Length: 254
Image (cartoon, rainbow, N blue to C red; front, side):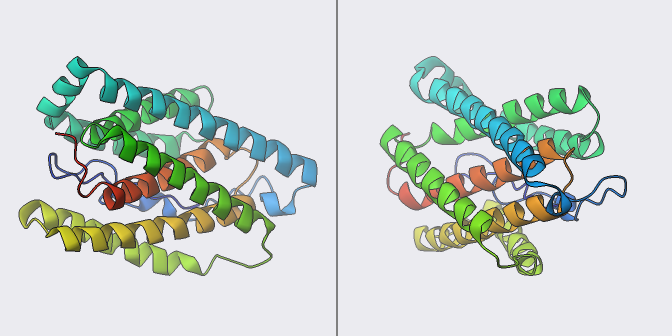
């Protein structure tokens, strides 16, 4: 299993989810009691896929609602921008909930409650970041992100290639991003350097979408649909944040 939980880095607030937290959940999920999806019949895989992408759609829906509320309600926008400490709370809270999800991934209804709480916390962080950009830039980033996600997903699911070997490269690259994000807190980068890092980040999370999609449908079991949706959710929101930084370098809405 593999997913990337990394804090968001903005100039106005210290990192929440885009380039800087632990990656402990990236070890393959092994369940000796049930077969991997790659060993299951087609209808089992299809049912699993429906669950994963239905949950993912609900997560994106909640994140969109929260972000729109933060961006277009001026009172809420002012409050969240004036309290950057809440971003730290949401970052550590999201990481704690993610760890809890790993331990309770197959225990219902605890996993569902944890998933809802985790998505809400992440949605808060994403919403705050979006308030610092113009709405047109955010919309462009959303469209590009989902276009890339859908394209990479279709490519991976229809490819006969093995993408398992990408893991070590992606893991090492992720730690470079983590180091760069914390370094920027103390030594702010130039606009050009920040753009380079954002492009590098977008490439890495495109790779993670391919890698995670492949690993989900080859190394997970039918009971792991919640963790599968969490992995893809994290990949997509991190890709979105990278694209947002690329597009919005000159378009901050202060």
